[in-house]
Image (tube, rainbow, N blue to C red; front, side, top):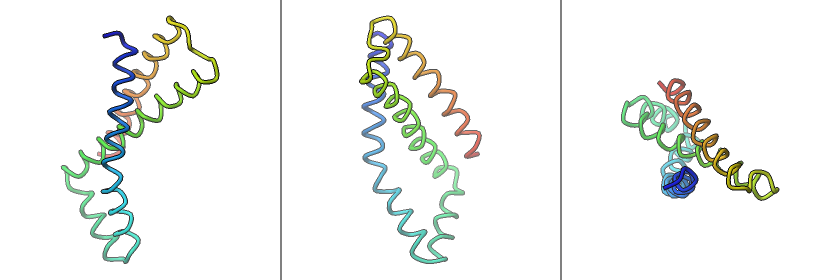
Length: 109
């Protein structure tokens, strides 16, 4: 596959991950806003290494989806629609997302 295909497939997968994860994120929001003890429970949950890993995965999907979405918006505006510029844009999305995801991992841990 060309790099543009990998970029497109990853964008779709990240959207599905976000759609599925929204239920858990809404539950955590509801619990944390319901009471002080609920806030403490969510805080304690997020200290667990597995919870941090899952949160990192969900936020990584969000970051990738955001960066790829900006690329699509630029393409809708007529920027980067050509073959060579599309390849460059896909590479930029993958590299920029990887850097942001690593920085996110450092921030979470």
